[in-house]
Amino acid sequence: MLGVVTDPDTDTDTDTETDNGPPPDADPGLDLISRVTRRAAGADEARRANRGWWDGAADWYQGEHGEFLRDAGFIWCPEGVDEAEVHLLGPVRGRRVLEVGCGAGQCTRWLMTQGADAVGFDLSASQLLHSRRLDERSGVRAPVLHADATRLPFADCVFDIACSAFGAVPFVADSGLVMAEVARVLRPGGRWVFSTNHPMSWCFPDDPGLGGLVARDPYFDRRPYVEQDEHGRATYVEQHRTLGDRVREIRSAGLVLEDLIEPEWPEGHARIWGQWSPLRGRIFPSTAIYVTAKRT
Image (cartoon, rainbow, N blue to C red; front, side, top):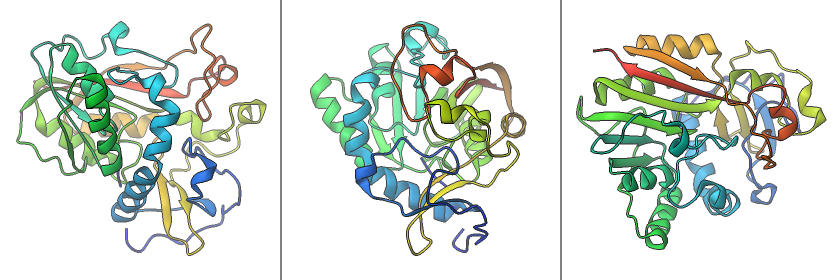
């Protein structure tokens, strides 16, 4: 998780009391927002907002989704793509692996059960506390630390693989910097695989039903989705990049895009998660998984 500008753009011509973009799958009972808008939000503002949001939502999030994610499991997305089946990371046994935006460490823990030398980090201290709880329950201790994806606390060329299942990348103001930092800590030829919302999902309301099938917002509107309080302070920020934007970030970091996976909705999978649903999933993708490698 991440992002931020202490003097954000105050253009709020798209302010609305309802959804105006792809919001988080949040418990309404958290009462964390009063308004939703699309406006500029720089690194400091987004980082502060998202850290607060995830610290406040961690208990609910793990309670709502923990069973699906499993204590030691590697689920790439709400469609249920499982690393144990798809092997997007390649062989992990004996490899040094970094999980970016690890949440409660489920993926890091799974990697350890597969023989990887894995470590994860997250911006949310509350998510990391849940990781400790899952360590005790599962009997597998995931090494995790509190860190920022734009300033990785690791030396150059120390990891064989880096991965992220919806961690950090969608939330930082400068995701190109995340790409550069991950490339820095990867060894030549190292793999970086990450999943995010599919960019086209930003055109549609965050509605898993029929209302979410009508395109409403311009694909090329790159202003972040921002939830803010009654004083205009951001409480949650999510960033939009087009497919072309993302490819250019990857290439600029010295990485090569090897594959782009747009998961189809699995037959018989009935779980609804935010805008992800069987109805929408049968028509267009809501997740994009980028498989990249550092140039040798």
